Length: 373
Image (cartoon, rainbow, N blue to C red; front, side, top):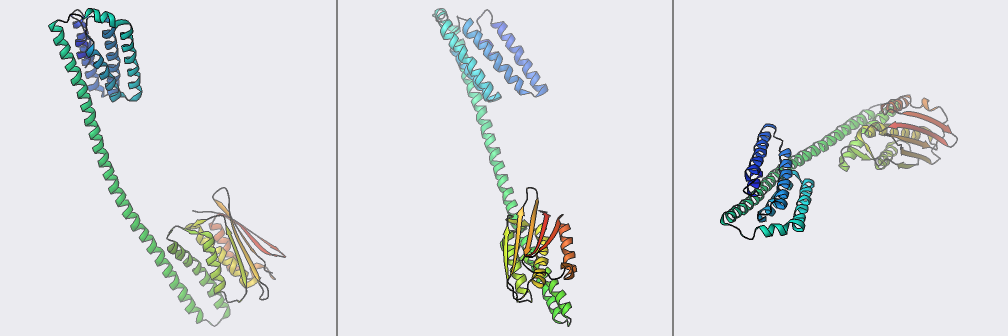
């Protein structure tokens, strides 16, 4: 390109020098490109040299008809945009505008004065130059169209591949959801079978104390079964709605208890959802506390009240506050040593601490626990 510009834009005196200079630059650029594969530098070199040659030719050579020069400069702008992007293209466009503006302000009269009589060789040279520039512009546009079509084909192939991958992923997700759903369903059923077996065994017992222990064991298994039932029912598979779960859990505990005490349950939770790793030990803790309150804290003649409050902390911890209005006539550890030991184990499992406070109005448990999910 530079060689053609140098040849077409020169007069008979300096034509050989311009042609030789542009040829050296072109050959050197090709050799550099073959060796380094760094096309950016070649684009910068052609844009810079093209602007310089076009500016000198347009304003210093008065005897040449500069119709082709304008087309060359348009070609240089297109070439720069095509190879280097918007910013270099805008800079080259500004340089070309300055060149043309300077020509029409200061050089156009001298140019017109010297080209009043165009000889046949000059006209032939002008025709060749115009044809060459038009073909160069057409070739550059043709290359752009080829690259654009190739990019569109690659994009279509990529989109098609992405659609196929999404289809496969969607199918796998559906299979995984079905599998997880089936796992929760089977775990729930297995736990229900265990509960049924414990109840059958309980009916065979004669000792009231043994029956009591079996009832507590049944309640603990029921807590785990209710979690999987809730996960299967809500189709969340990894989390349960905290307030809904504890509402159902405490209602089941009261229903299954052998006492006929009237108990009011108040539940509030700042945590909307709780994950599976946290809800299992947390549900067992609440089960032990509610069971102990129903069995040992409330009298038959007094309406019992239980308040469960879950508050979220800034970090991945939360606070569980459990209150009842019962009257504990004996120390709590005399009622269910295993239950209290289980509470300590579950609290440690949640990397937490527990404090118990007894007042005239009732008993309060305060837990600071870690959200494992």
